[in-house]
Image 1 (tube, rainbow, N blue to C red):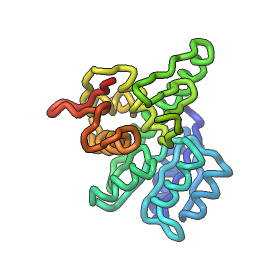
Image 2: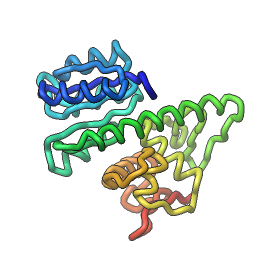
Image 3: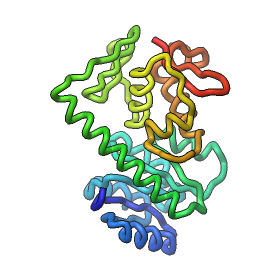
Length: 235
Protein backbone atom coordinates (compact mmCIF):
# COMPACT_ATOMS: atom_id res chain seq x y z
CA UNK A 1 0.00 0.00 0.00
CA UNK A 2 3.04 2.23 0.06
CA UNK A 3 2.55 5.18 -2.23
CA UNK A 4 -1.25 5.26 -2.04
CA UNK A 5 -2.61 8.75 -2.54
CA UNK A 6 -4.76 10.23 0.22
CA UNK A 7 -6.79 13.42 -0.03
CA UNK A 8 -7.10 15.14 3.35
CA UNK A 9 -9.91 17.69 3.58
CA UNK A 10 -9.64 19.73 6.77
CA UNK A 11 -9.96 23.47 7.42
CA UNK A 12 -8.07 23.40 10.74
CA UNK A 13 -4.54 24.17 9.58
CA UNK A 14 -2.87 22.72 12.69
CA UNK A 15 -4.69 19.40 12.36
CA UNK A 16 -4.17 19.40 8.60
CA UNK A 17 -0.41 19.82 9.04
CA UNK A 18 -0.30 17.06 11.66
CA UNK A 19 -2.22 14.65 9.44
CA UNK A 20 -0.13 15.47 6.39
CA UNK A 21 3.15 15.04 8.28
CA UNK A 22 2.19 11.68 9.74
CA UNK A 23 0.74 10.32 6.51
CA UNK A 24 3.86 11.28 4.57
CA UNK A 25 5.90 9.67 7.35
CA UNK A 26 3.95 6.46 6.61
CA UNK A 27 4.98 6.88 2.95
CA UNK A 28 1.59 7.92 1.60
CA UNK A 29 1.26 10.55 -1.10
CA UNK A 30 -0.84 13.38 0.33
CA UNK A 31 -3.05 16.01 -1.31
CA UNK A 32 -4.78 18.59 0.91
CA UNK A 33 -7.89 20.73 0.60
CA UNK A 34 -9.26 23.30 3.05
CA UNK A 35 -12.87 23.64 1.91
CA UNK A 36 -15.59 21.64 0.21
CA UNK A 37 -15.17 23.17 -3.22
CA UNK A 38 -11.45 22.37 -3.24
CA UNK A 39 -12.26 18.85 -2.05
CA UNK A 40 -14.44 18.19 -5.10
CA UNK A 41 -11.89 19.74 -7.44
CA UNK A 42 -8.94 17.73 -6.11
CA UNK A 43 -10.90 14.49 -5.80
CA UNK A 44 -11.79 14.71 -9.47
CA UNK A 45 -8.36 15.78 -10.70
CA UNK A 46 -6.10 13.77 -8.38
CA UNK A 47 -8.24 10.60 -8.11
CA UNK A 48 -7.01 9.66 -4.61
CA UNK A 49 -7.13 6.12 -3.26
CA UNK A 50 -8.82 7.31 -0.06
CA UNK A 51 -10.35 10.52 1.29
CA UNK A 52 -10.23 11.83 4.86
CA UNK A 53 -13.16 14.22 4.93
CA UNK A 54 -13.99 16.67 7.72
CA UNK A 55 -17.68 17.48 8.14
CA UNK A 56 -17.49 21.14 9.16
CA UNK A 57 -16.00 22.83 6.11
CA UNK A 58 -16.27 26.28 4.50
CA UNK A 59 -18.19 26.77 1.22
CA UNK A 60 -19.55 23.21 1.10
CA UNK A 61 -19.85 20.92 4.12
CA UNK A 62 -18.52 17.38 4.25
CA UNK A 63 -21.98 15.82 3.98
CA UNK A 64 -22.62 17.49 0.63
CA UNK A 65 -19.11 16.70 -0.61
CA UNK A 66 -19.63 13.04 0.32
CA UNK A 67 -23.03 12.92 -1.39
CA UNK A 68 -21.65 14.35 -4.63
CA UNK A 69 -18.48 12.25 -4.69
CA UNK A 70 -20.25 9.00 -3.93
CA UNK A 71 -22.27 9.40 -7.13
CA UNK A 72 -19.05 9.77 -9.13
CA UNK A 73 -16.36 7.69 -7.40
CA UNK A 74 -15.92 4.56 -5.34
CA UNK A 75 -12.80 5.22 -3.25
CA UNK A 76 -13.15 4.81 0.55
CA UNK A 77 -14.30 7.90 2.42
CA UNK A 78 -13.48 8.24 6.12
CA UNK A 79 -15.35 11.15 7.68
CA UNK A 80 -13.84 13.17 10.53
CA UNK A 81 -16.29 14.87 12.86
CA UNK A 82 -16.06 17.01 15.97
CA UNK A 83 -19.75 16.42 16.59
CA UNK A 84 -20.72 13.77 19.09
CA UNK A 85 -24.35 13.46 18.05
CA UNK A 86 -25.16 10.04 16.64
CA UNK A 87 -27.41 11.56 13.98
CA UNK A 88 -24.41 13.28 12.36
CA UNK A 89 -22.55 9.99 12.08
CA UNK A 90 -25.60 8.24 10.68
CA UNK A 91 -26.14 10.94 8.05
CA UNK A 92 -22.53 10.61 6.91
CA UNK A 93 -22.81 6.84 6.55
CA UNK A 94 -26.12 7.05 4.73
CA UNK A 95 -24.62 9.49 2.24
CA UNK A 96 -22.04 6.87 1.32
CA UNK A 97 -19.14 7.32 3.73
CA UNK A 98 -17.43 4.06 4.64
CA UNK A 99 -16.78 4.99 8.25
CA UNK A 100 -16.15 7.90 10.60
CA UNK A 101 -13.86 8.98 13.42
CA UNK A 102 -14.91 11.42 16.14
CA UNK A 103 -12.41 14.09 17.17
CA UNK A 104 -10.22 13.93 19.10
CA UNK A 105 -8.91 10.63 17.76
CA UNK A 106 -5.57 8.90 18.10
CA UNK A 107 -3.22 8.82 15.12
CA UNK A 108 -2.68 5.14 15.80
CA UNK A 109 -6.38 4.40 15.29
CA UNK A 110 -6.58 6.65 12.23
CA UNK A 111 -3.62 4.95 10.57
CA UNK A 112 -5.01 1.52 11.42
CA UNK A 113 -8.32 2.34 9.76
CA UNK A 114 -6.59 3.76 6.70
CA UNK A 115 -4.50 0.61 6.32
CA UNK A 116 -7.59 -1.57 6.74
CA UNK A 117 -9.57 0.39 4.14
CA UNK A 118 -6.78 0.32 1.57
CA UNK A 119 -6.09 -3.35 2.24
CA UNK A 120 -9.76 -4.10 1.65
CA UNK A 121 -9.73 -2.19 -1.65
CA UNK A 122 -6.74 -4.24 -2.82
CA UNK A 123 -8.48 -7.48 -1.88
CA UNK A 124 -11.61 -6.51 -3.80
CA UNK A 125 -9.58 -5.51 -6.86
CA UNK A 126 -7.77 -8.85 -6.78
CA UNK A 127 -11.09 -10.70 -6.49
CA UNK A 128 -12.44 -8.78 -9.48
CA UNK A 129 -9.35 -9.57 -11.55
CA UNK A 130 -9.59 -13.26 -10.77
CA UNK A 131 -13.30 -13.16 -11.53
CA UNK A 132 -12.52 -12.59 -15.20
CA UNK A 133 -11.36 -16.20 -15.29
CA UNK A 134 -13.60 -17.84 -12.72
CA UNK A 135 -16.79 -15.95 -13.64
CA UNK A 136 -18.48 -15.86 -10.22
CA UNK A 137 -22.20 -16.47 -10.32
CA UNK A 138 -24.97 -13.98 -9.91
CA UNK A 139 -26.81 -14.64 -6.67
CA UNK A 140 -30.57 -14.64 -7.27
CA UNK A 141 -33.08 -14.47 -4.46
CA UNK A 142 -36.62 -13.77 -5.60
CA UNK A 143 -36.51 -10.58 -7.65
CA UNK A 144 -33.09 -9.65 -6.17
CA UNK A 145 -29.95 -10.22 -8.24
CA UNK A 146 -26.41 -9.68 -6.93
CA UNK A 147 -23.83 -9.68 -9.73
CA UNK A 148 -20.54 -10.41 -7.98
CA UNK A 149 -18.40 -9.78 -11.05
CA UNK A 150 -19.88 -6.45 -12.07
CA UNK A 151 -20.50 -5.13 -8.55
CA UNK A 152 -24.14 -4.54 -9.38
CA UNK A 153 -27.39 -5.26 -7.62
CA UNK A 154 -30.83 -5.15 -9.21
CA UNK A 155 -34.31 -5.66 -7.87
CA UNK A 156 -37.18 -6.50 -10.16
CA UNK A 157 -34.92 -5.77 -13.11
CA UNK A 158 -34.08 -2.24 -11.93
CA UNK A 159 -30.51 -1.41 -10.88
CA UNK A 160 -29.99 -0.26 -7.29
CA UNK A 161 -27.52 2.47 -6.40
CA UNK A 162 -25.42 1.01 -3.60
CA UNK A 163 -22.21 2.37 -2.16
CA UNK A 164 -19.19 0.04 -2.48
CA UNK A 165 -19.43 -0.85 1.20
CA UNK A 166 -23.15 -1.57 1.00
CA UNK A 167 -22.50 -3.92 -1.91
CA UNK A 168 -19.68 -5.70 -0.11
CA UNK A 169 -21.78 -6.19 3.03
CA UNK A 170 -24.74 -7.53 1.07
CA UNK A 171 -22.58 -9.79 -1.09
CA UNK A 172 -20.73 -11.19 1.92
CA UNK A 173 -23.91 -12.05 3.79
CA UNK A 174 -25.58 -13.46 0.67
CA UNK A 175 -22.58 -15.66 -0.12
CA UNK A 176 -22.76 -16.97 3.45
CA UNK A 177 -26.53 -17.25 3.70
CA UNK A 178 -28.07 -18.52 6.93
CA UNK A 179 -24.80 -17.98 8.79
CA UNK A 180 -25.02 -15.52 11.67
CA UNK A 181 -22.25 -12.93 11.98
CA UNK A 182 -21.64 -10.61 14.88
CA UNK A 183 -21.12 -6.91 14.22
CA UNK A 184 -17.44 -7.18 15.15
CA UNK A 185 -17.04 -10.10 12.76
CA UNK A 186 -18.64 -8.11 9.95
CA UNK A 187 -16.31 -5.18 10.66
CA UNK A 188 -13.43 -7.61 10.31
CA UNK A 189 -14.65 -9.40 7.17
CA UNK A 190 -16.19 -6.47 5.25
CA UNK A 191 -14.37 -3.40 6.55
CA UNK A 192 -11.10 -5.22 7.12
CA UNK A 193 -10.71 -4.09 10.73
CA UNK A 194 -8.73 -6.48 12.90
CA UNK A 195 -9.79 -4.70 16.08
CA UNK A 196 -13.09 -3.74 17.70
CA UNK A 197 -14.52 -0.79 15.81
CA UNK A 198 -17.78 1.14 16.26
CA UNK A 199 -20.50 -1.40 15.50
CA UNK A 200 -22.96 1.41 14.74
CA UNK A 201 -21.32 1.46 11.32
CA UNK A 202 -22.67 -2.01 10.61
CA UNK A 203 -26.14 -1.21 11.93
CA UNK A 204 -26.50 1.84 9.69
CA UNK A 205 -25.40 -0.04 6.58
CA UNK A 206 -27.83 -2.87 7.35
CA UNK A 207 -30.67 -0.40 7.81
CA UNK A 208 -29.82 1.37 4.58
CA UNK A 209 -29.65 -1.94 2.67
CA UNK A 210 -33.03 -2.98 4.01
CA UNK A 211 -34.54 0.20 2.64
CA UNK A 212 -33.15 -0.72 -0.79
CA UNK A 213 -33.82 -4.46 -1.06
CA UNK A 214 -36.73 -5.28 1.25
CA UNK A 215 -40.40 -4.90 0.35
CA UNK A 216 -41.08 -3.99 3.97
CA UNK A 217 -37.88 -2.76 5.68
CA UNK A 218 -39.58 -2.86 9.08
CA UNK A 219 -40.24 -6.58 8.60
CA UNK A 220 -37.29 -7.79 6.49
CA UNK A 221 -37.27 -11.19 4.77
CA UNK A 222 -33.62 -11.32 3.75
CA UNK A 223 -31.45 -9.22 6.09
CA UNK A 224 -32.43 -10.54 9.49
CA UNK A 225 -31.35 -9.51 12.97
CA UNK A 226 -30.46 -12.28 15.39
CA UNK A 227 -30.97 -10.66 18.76
CA UNK A 228 -27.92 -10.57 20.95
CA UNK A 229 -25.73 -11.94 18.17
CA UNK A 230 -25.76 -10.06 14.87
CA UNK A 231 -27.13 -10.48 11.35
CA UNK A 232 -27.75 -13.13 8.71
CA UNK A 233 -29.06 -13.37 5.15
CA UNK A 234 -32.01 -15.61 4.38
CA UNK A 235 -32.97 -16.60 0.84
